[in-house]
Length: 442
Image 1 (spheres, rainbow, N blue to C red):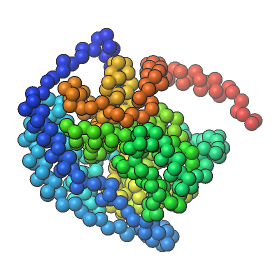
Image 2 (tube, helix red, strand yellow; image 1 turned 90 degrees about the vertical axis):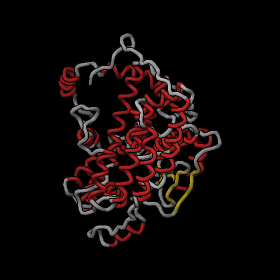
Image 3 (cartoon, rainbow, N blue to C red; image 1 turned 60 degrees about the vertical axis):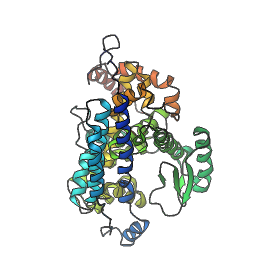
Image 4 (tube, rainbow, N blue to C red; image 1 turned 180 degrees about the horizontal axis):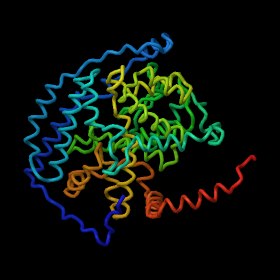
């Protein structure tokens, strides 16, 4: 990937200025968009009740799950968006940003209108891409990264990775987890934290919303589970929700619509990496979901996906849960999955590259503004333009690594230099050396 221009040669763009009348018009569009997108609740629409898994297991995993959905009536959403479109006619980055939001909300509404059919999958591709989507216009794809992670990390045994350590062993009950997590969130969010609740009817071990994190009553958690939930769900997802809700001038920043998913999930996964909360099993789960989406696109049905995950993890519940994530809302017989989970790997690559170039260009302001609300990296010209006019508030709630940037800056500056080295020559040198090393235990 080519290096960006150096700070000495890059020419800063002169800030554009929106007139008071144009600001008022765009604020009206943002408020109307916030209202228009509210019926488009993707994860709620594609959810499965716990009885689906119970019936599947009772049938010894030999029958496709019986799932029904309620299609969304997209007509009112499109009518509202049609009224908003004239308000965003213009050439500024803010006009372009709100235009992209209109497109994303409209496509998401169409996706939910076609829920349970191949049309759902087609709109899913438009919103989230697929395992074959090129990363940053380069000849690499999420599928390539998933296969590399699978090959590299899958070569290690649990013993070699010390996965029997206390921090990786589920030993914390939901009742014990709840006060521990709540105390961490209360400190970070200064008393206005999301509530940590215990729930009886969850498919996954935990479920997060903008104002809550729910823990499955019967689940057990490890110390690493706690760290991953805090850094991913709370410090990033809840944090950007709270920061977006504070943007009174542009309330659309409080909406986690589908157009923000790549960046928001990429930020959350990067947070796990930079904080040390990530581990190989979690990274492999992200990779396996990408591989499974490709399998489903190639025709694998739910049972085949379940067997794929069962072979990987030897846990029927986790296998069911991962297969469910791939096909929810789509076609269980194969060929038309929900492709959202391919954005986790794509998103973290996009976020990492953006942060790398932002550090090189000394644009710390852009790093922190990433947390101003629910937004996509490509929205940054609009966000900075509005911030320059005092129309976007600085984010109040930042992850520790974004609030104190010293480690991030040091890490990015160092790793950026490594990216300039000729890896083939370095690899050949160390491969020859390692082959001459006697393996431990022989």
